[in-house]
Image (tube, rainbow, N blue to C red):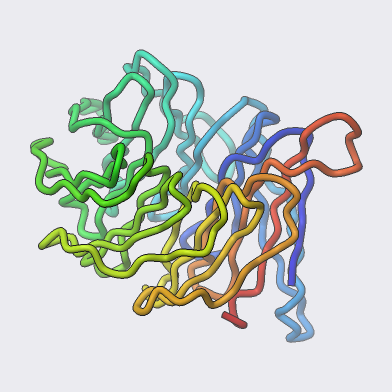
Length: 303
């Protein structure tokens, strides 16, 4: 099953709300949020998307806060936070000296991590009156561990794990032959998955640094990566116009999702693990001569 939404610009990233009721996406057109509407006849293989919020600013990576009440996204050299229901701007976090590339909430929602082309990763306190920032390293993609104590950023050949409180480097994970473009912790925090321009994804033990499964099948670079909520599957977004789902334990490919006509940039599992949203640079015929993004919802129950 696929459900597509069409835009007049590239769709950079997608994110489900923690309860799975809403889907957010970012594009050059702005930030959009939809309610995910399931039919009442029990046929859950058909999904409708009902737009509930539009923020008309050109934005990049987006994520919901753990309680679903806030949205954080990249705008130029800053990150911004909005009320996820009303669209009211809550906070702007300037401080980076170049474009911000990624954002991630801490599991308790009190901090936000950002990465930037200025060569730094920062952690911002979101508590009232304590909007401080801690520089913890470098990278273009960022993820918090499920317990909030560790931060992961990408590197030229792998990833680095950092102490989220002190900014101290804990572990370097090296093994890719080209730049890593995406990082994701497993739900139990014991593994980190990385997606690379070398056309592979890899999994790592976050305590020992030992490399585990490799996920090989994309023809060119892999841009994004995500774990299913139970940690048994991994989804990847590829520059070969495919999204793929893998067995996280064995590294075997479970499903190759075709249909995009451009680079696939983002993947996100729904919180119940039954659906996968993807974002892309692909063109449609609805806006001739312009690159349009589409957000398909794939049925994850066949995976």
